[in-house]
Amino acid sequence: MWRAAQVFRLLSCVYALGFQIAVNDDLIHPAVGWALFGVLVAWSVACAAAYLHGYGRRVAWVGAEVVVVLALMLSTEVVASDQWALDNQSWPTTLWATNATISAAILLGPVAGMAAGLLVTASNAVLKGYVSVDVGRNATVVIELAVGLAIGLAAQTARRAHADLQRAARLAATLEERERLSREVHDGAIQVLALVARRGREIGGPTTELADLAGEQERALRRWVSASGAPVPAGLSTDLVTLMRRHAADRVSISVPPEPVLLPDEVAHEVDAAVTNALDNVAAHAGAAAHAFVLVEDLEDSVVVSIRDDGPGIPAGRLEEAVGEGRLGVSKSIVGRLNWLGGTARLTTSPGGGAEWELTIPRSR
Image (cartoon, helix red, strand yellow):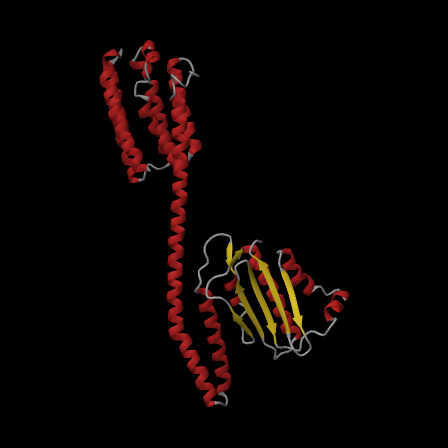
């Protein structure tokens, strides 16, 4: 936009030169008029260089441009008669003066652009001695305000788009580096740990403990690689798959779709909290040898998360008894959360048959 503005500046200077040649004989001080026109050209060249090279894209420089423009417009009283000022536009032409409005709008936005346009209009009114309310014959104020507003909004939009593009580029670079590190970890450390675990178990004896430690670290690294490999789009959505993979452990198996399951951020974390509570109950009540299995299903109109364990199950009436004793973990942390989300939490259990929670979250929520 700065380059386009300097093209407009060049065209406005050409127009100002034509206007100067046409009206020079009507000025009361034509020599002073040409001298001031030299100042106009020199300042235009300085502004073009400053804005194109970037060092002029500062509030101080734009403020100086507004001051110079207003000074040259008010110099009409020096080079022309009062009658000439009434019958014509200001001496350096309002088209050239619009450069100050454009610069302010690009740097500072629509409000500053419109303010600069009002100053240009006000200086023109000072020269004529009155404020014209007939926009049909004098549309200077409308043009200046429209230019300041339109270019200011365009500049703000362009800056936001540029910032979004930079963030997207940084995100892409981060994801690419993460993928590279994941490949190196998989091809290096994970393979070595798997070999140590396998050979340690084959040898037996004291190396079995080392094999178990190596196997545990191998599984942890595999979880990290799989969890970091699915990028989540920017915005208010969170990948439920990534949250569920964090629960993977030696006695917790996770089965998830290959693609991200995106839910609103608040919904996804509430579901994750309910799953965490269910897994905590397994660890606390199902026995040290119990295994838990988490399954995520992405259906067209809903997402279903199942948490099943192979423990002894929940005795009949135990949940009601817990509520009577004031223990509201299940009713509040699981059922209550799903009800708040507009979904359902259904528990299936039998003595010796383990327990299974089925959490259903509607997509409409």
